[in-house]
Amino acid sequence: MSELRKEILQVVVVLVALVFIIKLFFIQVADSRYAEMADSNAISKETDYPFRGLIYDRHGKLIVYNTPEFDLKVVVKDMAAFDSARFCDVFRISREELRQKFRVMKARKEYAPVKPTVFDHQLSNEEFARVQDHLDEFPGFFIHARTGRSYTTPVLANALGYVSEITKTALEKDASGFYKQGDYVGQSGIEGFYEEQLRGKRGVRYKLRNAKGVIKGSFNQGRYDTLPVPGQNLYTGIDLDLQTYGEQLLKGKAGSIVCIEPATGEILALVSGPSYDPNLLTGRRYGSNFALISSDTLKPLFNRPLMAQYRPGSIFKIAQAMTALQEGVITPETRVRCDRSIINCHGGHSNEDLRGAIANSCNPYFHNVLRRMLNKGITNDPFTDTRLGLTEWNKHVYSFGFGKPLGIDLPNEKSGLIPTPEYYDRAYNNRAWKFSNIYSIAIGEGENLVVPIQMANFAATIANRGYYYTPHLVKAIGENGQPLPQYQVRHYTTIDSANFLIAVDAMQAVVERGTGQYRARLKDIIVCGKTGTVENEPPLFDHSVFIAFAPRDNPKIAVSVYVEDAGQGARAAASIASLMIEKYLIGQTQRPHIEQYVLNGKFTD
Image (tube, rainbow, N blue to C red):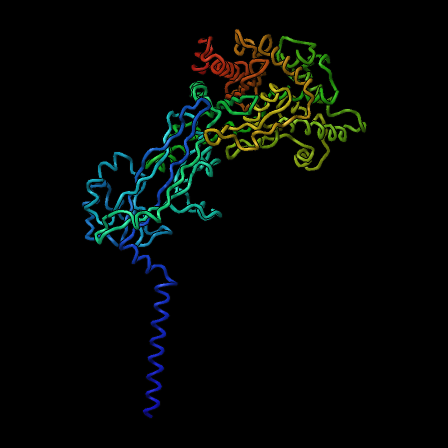
């Protein structure tokens, strides 16, 4: 019996020892919490955030830079005799706000009582100066410096985008594992598209703390520290003076201005109206300001140059002309009587050739041109012929960059719409359709939809006599860098360059003696342009549209302008486009009366 008791006792001792061994294994090896608690008594691990890359204009003018911000962090375990009333007094918050901040902090995924956690973020210089002398009154709390974004001028907001703390949803979708909660990330515009180049790489610093939590210096002489790597600077094609002028001209109006350098595809100005001051979406007031801006019924966050889809109107007649020339259904000398019983037209012309039809924007001419294009008599069945002709028409029109996103270096670019046979099959529920059902596309109305960036690119394509570079904002990543590879490729249309010369002649005639002569013509610069008046829903006025490039030979700038509800294209849009051309090529306008006309904004009186 005594032997049995002895064996039982031995087994119990062994089991107890085994339990202790297993427990020690989990404490020291499997579960890192205990190691963290031990280390946290002596070592503080701090993220060293990098400087985000700066953004410059084409002349080296600074657009976006970094400013210091301060996060208030806390190690909850080190909070001793916390005086909440005094804390609320120093930080100028209510007791309920204090409780809410603690709730938000403890809900974060990375929260642990033994680890530094962000309690409040983005304190400004002024706020930091006010509280820094009182921090020693609150053990466990300390300041962690980082940088936020600031802007030299209140322009270009829709193109630049903004930076804010990464959302929980975005963090969950981050397959790279690069980001952590609390990191800032580019949310739209250049900041979002070039996030990988701008963000840099985080560093880490390990610091020794005493029993009271006071930092006493680097751990192990900084041997385990890693330095942050700053982000790359971006050099854009934007002309900041031109951009500022464009936003001044579009102030109080809804629409867009897009300016491109044809030889490179670099965007010189990208104006969306109405817009907002980018400085509003920085710092501690980001959340409240974003709510105000996003709820504005004028939609200042809506990037019209990339996202607004309009009918192109008469500017599309140039694409129709070159397509018809390429298909051989007309020649430059082809004349068509302006028969207004078929389709309405403007006054002052009759039996024009192609150049005259473009210069005077003759609707019956281009109705006839598209009919010839779509009804070639291949099968002598109008339904089949229209279908075959539209397929050929699509091929040419798509080659100008219509009907698809161009691939600009900004998010959320829309495609517009170029109708196909399949589109009309769906629209007519698979019933038969023919030219007489769809002829309104001949004059840029009907189902056609374009995006302003596409029209500026179209003007650049004509300026280049048949090719374009994908429009892009950033021309160099790093001081001596280059744009991304896709922005260095020429895209050729299906149209012979000789046919573009006809378009150039006609666009020159538009400005010198046609619909654009009163507000688009410049004294010493040959401007080639085309007006457009886009139908709108009554009782609203039509949209005013104009595309142009200048000078005629070796063009330096291509422009598209849309002004919503402003009436004829020869008024608002032609005026703004010509002023932008003057500003870029000369430095100022030589026609103050036109500038004042635009600033007054009374286009439909």
